[in-house]
Length: 382
Image (cartoon, rainbow, N blue to C red):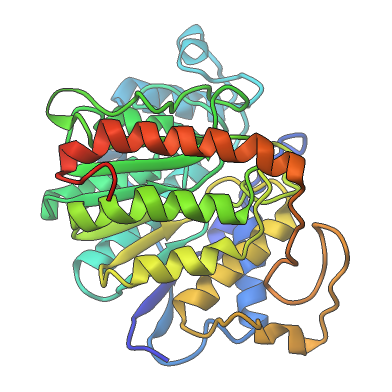
C-alpha cells in the first residue's frame, strides 16, 4: 500500500449524455469503468474517494474558447447550425451536431477542472477523470469528436499556480489542440506519443514540430509507426519521455490515457497491450509529483474500460505482474477481446512487424533527441 490520496472524478449526470448512435465515441465508458472498479473493490479503501464534479462555467470555458464559438456550440445543440458554425468545424463526420454536445462538454471540462482544483489545494495527489481528454478542440474550432478542450483549460489553470506543467499525451491521435494552445510557451511542456500523421487523423504531430519563439523545444512529438508493439513503445518512453521529465522537473503532471493505442481498436493501427500502462504509470509516480489523468480515445469499449481499470489499480498500488484479478474466475481467450483479469494477454510480434517498426522508431527517437534534447541541457547520446 501507499499514502497516495486518490480521487476518481465522476457524476451520474455525465452518464445521461450520449453521442449519436452512429458515432464511434461512447461517453458511457466512464460509467462502465466506475461499475468495474466498484465490482473489484478499487474505489474503497483508505486514501481513495469519489468526487462529483460540477460543469464548467461560461467564464471558465472562456479562459480558452472564444465567446462567439461558445455561442455557436449552444446554437448547434439547440438544433440551429449556422454558416459560422460550419466554418468552426461543426457538422462534419467527426463533429456531429446533437443535443448533448455543449452540456456534455461542460461536464467533461468541469470534471478535469475539478481534478486540477483537488491537486492544487492538496486534497488529492492523483485525480482521474475518465470523461476528459478532448485534446483536438481548438479555441474556435471543433474537431475529432472534441468540442471543448478540458486538457487546455486545466493546464491553463495549473500554470497560473506553477511555472512548469507537463502535459503528456499517450492517446493514439496527436493532441493538436493542446499543441496549438501552448506552442509558443514554456510553462507547459507538451509531449505527445501518437500514431504518425501519415496514417492517422489529424495528420499532424511530426518530429519537426517543436514549438516556436520562447516555446521552442517545449513541444515534443513522437510519431509512431502502425503496428508498434509494447517493447518498442516502452523504449520510446524511456529514451524520450523520462529524460525530458527529469530535465523539466514539472510541478504537476497531466497525462491523457487514450486507450485507442491498444490492438483491436477499430480506428487506429497500433498493436499495444495494456501491459505497457502499469510500467508507465509507475515511472510517472516515481517522480513524486501530483498527477491528473484523463481519458481520451478508445473505441473498443471493453478494452478501454479494462485498460483504465488497470491504470486505476496501478495508482492504488494494488497491481502486480500476476494480476490477482485473474483469480476472480476470469478466463483468457485467444483474441484481443476477452473477459477476465485486467491485464491483456501478451501478443506475439512477428519478424516482419519488427522489421517495419524498429527502423522507424529509431529514426524518430534520434531526430527528436538531436533537435530537442540540447534545448533542455540533455546530451543527445545520454
